[in-house]
Image (cartoon, rainbow, N blue to C red):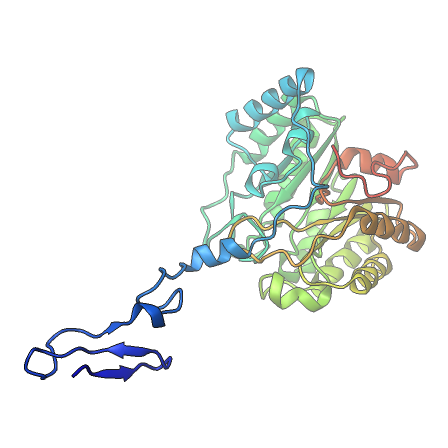
Length: 358
C-alpha cells in the first residue's frame, strides 16, 4: 500500500511504504507530475536580486547617446585625467550620468565636494550612503580650484552631498570651495547645486552672502506626493521650496534653478503643478529629465514619457514664465549648464522639441 498526504498548497505528496507495508523511513517527495515551477521539487526559485532585475524596464528606442571622437575624445580624456589627478569627485561619475561623454568631451564637469558619500539614502540616487562620512578634506577647495583652472572652463558647476553630520550641513565648506575657485579663476562663471542644508536657513544665508555665483540650484527631485517614496525622510518638496524661496529673497541678483525627474510614478498633471509651485517660489531655470534606475536596489522606473511629452512640458514651462528650460529624456540637472545660463540671459534654447540625441 502506498501512503499520500497533501501539503499546504494542496499538492499530492508520496510518503512511500516499506516492503512490509509500514511507513518508509525517508523524507517525503513531491510527485513530479504534481509540481509547479518554483516549488520545492521544481525549478529553482529566483533570488531577490534576480526578481528585481527581471522587473527592470528596457530602455525605449529614443535613448541614444554619441561617444566623443577626435577633439572631443581628446578633451574627454584630458578632463577625466584632471579630475582623477586631483582626487576630485564628480557627479558625472558618482551618479552615473548618461551625459558624461557629452559634457567631458566639451571640457566641462560637475564637481562634487564634501566627499563621495552622502548622509541620506534617497531611493533614486547612486551616490553611496554613510551615517557619519569621513571628515572634510581641508585641501579640497585648493585642489578644486587648480583642477578648474587647468581645464580652462567658462562655467563650472559645484554640487554637494548632504552632510547632516555637520552643524551647518557643510555650508562653510561649500563656501570655501566657491571662493577658492573664484580667486584662482575669476573669469569662470560658477553655479552651486546645493543640498537643502536640512532646512537651516541661517546656514543658507551665511553661505550665500556676497558669494560670487551666477546660479544657485537646488533640486526638488520629484512631485510632492512621491516624497516619502523617492526621497530620504529628512527631505521634502516643501522644505526644498523653502530653500529656493529664501535663496531668491537673499540673492535677487542671481538666477535660481531646480530640477524634476519623471518616471517615478507621477502624473502629467502633477508635473505641471510642480512647475507652477517652483516658479511661484522664484525659480527662473528648470530642467526635466527621465529617471533611470541606477541598480536593481533602487526604485524601478514607472514609465518612459516619449520625447513629445517632454516637448510639451518644455512649452508649458516657458509659458509659465521660466527664463531657461531643458526638458528631455537624457537631461540632468547640470546638463549643458553654461549654455542654459546663456539661454536665461537671452540666448538660444539648448533643446528644442524634446530632442534626445547628443
